[in-house]
Image 1 (cartoon, one colour):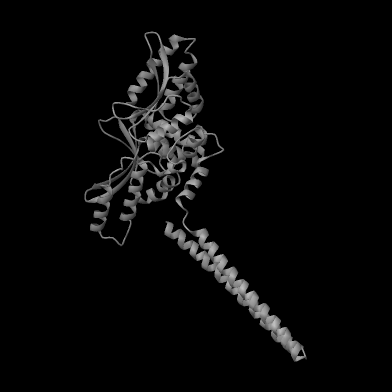
Image 2 (cartoon, rainbow, N blue to C red):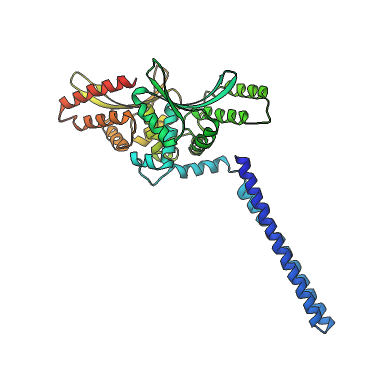
Length: 386
């Protein structure tokens, strides 16, 4: 695709320079005609020679200026059409990442850019880019998974993209949305994930996925060559210290809300929370229930640090003995921030959990019986989702 873009730019450059050459030749021709006319009209050879010298000198100056203009134009065009640097691309990302639109159910449904950011966040949580060998051929599969309890969220994705298929695993409480058609991957999926990179280490898998796509689409390679190259890609392991390149915008360090918001958008965080966030009530004694929010990651602690900054959570990210990172809070101020942040944004069954959770917070000091009832309902919902 980049080659086509560069080819188009070069064609524009050649056309522009060609037009300048034609204008240059036309001016020179006009000067020659004026020169001939003056020679006929003037009777004094000395005067004629004098004027001819002036005209010839001006002609050369004009030609020199045109050539100079041509070279300058060509240089500018070449500089303009050169592939942007990584920093330029990331600067463009930060502009795309910010939107004057509020993020809510309506804007996520109607605004393509907000939905794209949401989808990337959801994929960072529950999506995969798979390269699989099946029946002697290579398959590329983009897949999103959810429990059948939350099947409606996968229907939402399918309706928004207008492509893909849904299937439910037999004897397993899991459903999947997937795209296997390479033409659809190229026309629908790649533009989204190229514009809004994944923030987790899944970006590494996405880049492998695209590399395999390029190899399998190359008509100059034999099947055996493709097998070897794609196998090498599949066997390429994730570096232990891998961080998605997009974080280089802030030198891979989240220091405050401003730095976090340069990389992580609200739409992304809503999508990621649909997949990875947990809203629940926890017992703090026989007669006390408190609100809690938690999000965990096996890798990508930088993502949790950014979420902490964006949501105004005071507690720090912790590493658990089970081998994962956790960001959790029961702080009332943080809970209020969360209620405001996620109000009218969630789409799947987590939307119902969040509504019940928020309602319980409203009644926490005035109606314990109602809070207990909500707690029982939420416990059942969480079991269904697991």
